[in-house]
Image (cartoon, rainbow, N blue to C red; front, side, top):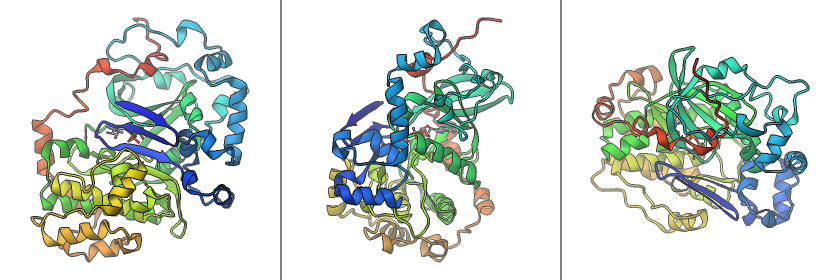
Length: 443
Ligand SMILES: Nc1ncnc2c1ncn2[C@@H]1O[C@H](COP(=O)(O)OP(=O)(O)OP(=O)(O)O)[C@@H](O)[C@H]1O
């Protein structure tokens, strides 16, 4: 996996080939307009991501939101290096910089944070990331690395107390602040706390240690991308079930005033019965129906033209992403091949007349054309549009009924192909986590 940061952009070569991508519209807006949008609160809350990826000189100190000023002044006092933090915390030496080779199933432990008054470096992450007693963390044993995303590293852990397996996303506090993504991290957990839906992967727990933020969910051994990589094209009957499940989730989120902004196969986990769970709210934000966003973010191949061009855009962008996803499930390939950045991607999307295979059934072709309409107003966006769509004839838009539909091919693929997540070797363990793991002395 390969992280690259360049002026104005950041892309992370994710396991699935999808690239989580964030930048700001600053490059596209005159400074005055940009400042005005900030003042009006019209710029998406992904300001943090933008600052993380946009070259400071490009923005010329124009962004005057109170938050960056606040933490930056704090930061300048502390220094941005790890040693600065260690000094701040008195975290010197061996205790947290343990460099011994890792053994299987270490404990996921970071020293407890119970001193009073609460230092700013803890306070900043409250209340969304509460402090947990050390005993809570000591119950977690790391079983392996699941994935290294652009915002954090996901581990498979065993909760010895609950005797259950979970996935924990670990984010380095220093990086969160350096990249100006605190606000988005908080938004991620507050959105995940707010939502409860059969096709959304719900948040189990989240907390902070001295150096890291932790987001824990139940563990799913397979995601849609790995299934697609194994199976290739999906049968239309299966596509209609997955599509209906995703339509229900997206309508639910949009009705709550939430835009996901990173709908892609890698962010769709599959439960033990083969039904989906949308995950990764790391780019999501609250956006009322009538509001517009401007931040260029998402995963390039799934980003709608209006997102790639810097907005304004709204929830219709999620429907475009669904179109890309369904197109890929149906044909085994993406409608437009990946480009290196959003400018090249926009050019490709604008000029490309993707060909919908004539072998696809007409109703599915129609749905794909509608979802992949370059004009966001022409995309279907209410549940009613899908319920009456000929492609969904006979499909009940009811979570309970959908969950009863057998997804045999998923189960069969799961049985015959070892999951890529399960087979990930332990030696690929994240180097950053090594530095803060405390290895228990044998009892
Ligand atoms: N609960 C889970 N069970 C199994 N795998 C998971 C779980 N949560 C996340 N993953 C895997 O880890 C990957 C990265 O997680 P996540 O998307 O939350 O991190 P991220 O840093 O936001 O990544 P991205 O670069 O996609 O934005 C997911 O695409 C998924 O494959």
